[in-house]
Image (tube, rainbow, N blue to C red; front, side):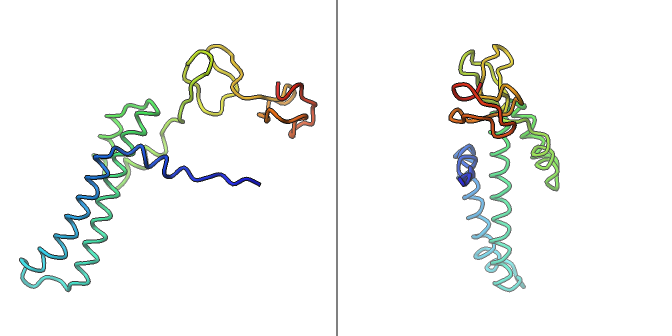
Length: 164
C-alpha cells in the first residue's frame, strides 16, 4: 500500500518570503523585549522564567499569525477568491474567526484542461468546456480508474485498452 506524502512544505512555500522574514523578525523582537528590555527597564518585573515563557509564546503567536496572513493572501490568489478581500478579512476579524471563515469557505484548487486550457475543478472527470477526458473512467459506473486496469475495481466491467 502506498502512503500519501505530506504536502506541508509545498503549502508553506506559497507564503511570500518577506512574510517569513517579517515573522522571524517579530519573533526575535519579542524575545529581545521580554528577555532583555523588560527586566532591565521595568521595576518589579515578573520573574525571568515567566518573561522567557511570554517571550517565546508571544513571539511564536505573532509569527504564526503573520505566516497565516501570508498563506491566506497567496492561497486566495491561487484559488481565484479575491486576494485583497480575504486578506483584509482575516486581518480585521478578530479571535481567529476570519481564518476559520476562510478555511471553511475556500474554493477547491483549480487545474487546467490540457486540451483547451480552461480552468477545471480538481476531481472532475471531463473538461466542462471541451469535454476532454481528464481521467480515465469506467464506462459502466463512471468511477475513476487507473489506465493500467483491465477491469473496473468498482463494478467489475472489463475495460477496453485501459479506462474508457
